[in-house]
Amino acid sequence: MTRTLTATLLALSLALLGPGAALAQRAADPLESRLEARKVVVADGRETLADAATVKPGDVIEYVATYRNTGTRPITGLQATVPVPPDTEFVPGTARPAQAQASLDGRTFAAIPLKRMATRNGRQVEEQVPYREYRYLRWTAGELGSGKALAFTARVRVVDDRTPSEPGSKGGRP
Image 1 (tube, one colour):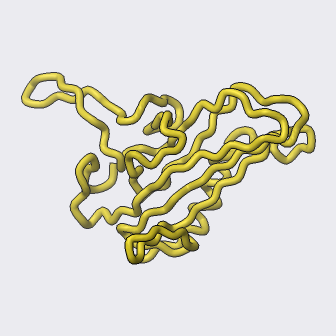
Image 2: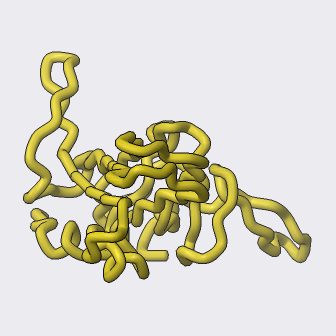
Image 3: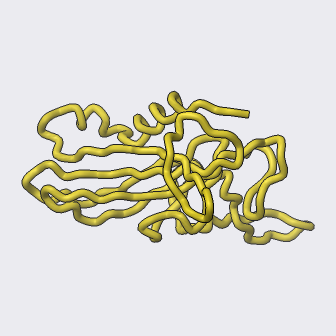
């Protein structure tokens, strides 16, 4: 199965900009953001990055969100958010910087790995949320100085709901 990511990347770019998208269009807003997606290709033990326009289940996509301060004053309180597309799962250990948080709904974020309470055999137990259910990653950037840029990176794997999932995931759609 092959998927074209053009529409997904457009949606991700809009989601990355979020409510501030209209502000980003104004010349007075000094914060620029850019989201790039590249397919991770491994050949002869070496990783390279290629165009991610067409992917298939099992492919890994690296997202890089870059925020740039074009203004003359520092920007404080920056929270960089990267959406995790449907039919993909976050690849643990790939978030850079490593202090990322994750969310299932884009409103509530917590440290990775996410945990939740579930009832098993009549008892409440804490369990890890499958990576396939993550929908957003967020980093708290603190201050972004004038003329400076920060990049935030994470990888996702394209999944096929018809195949068994990997450990830490769950089969089928969330």
